[in-house]
Length: 131
Image (tube, rainbow, N blue to C red; front, side, top):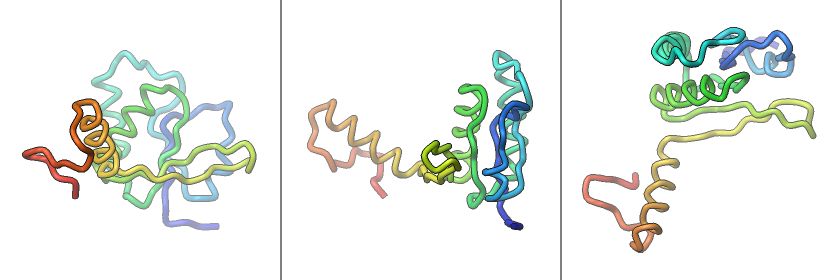
């Protein structure tokens, strides 16, 4: 099956089988192997350079280091505002798609702040927007 989408995999592991993910699009690895996570500037640059080729309709698959995955997600959301992530579902023996949106995260953060600060939820602070 040819797909116009790309699956961006945060880190290529030679011990992981990505066959199921490749059915959703061409695989593109953001980093490869045992990556030096403490070189954060270099890591961030590599992730940005790889994800600059992504589109909002592509997929993001987390594999390997949680630091690499976290940076990749942050960069992806900064670029697109929405991420279609692939999560492994053992019961289905395949990846499932979940959508995460920057806009929804902002709303939930503001709601949590309202609760902590004792404000009725739904109040809009000066300089913020719920849209």
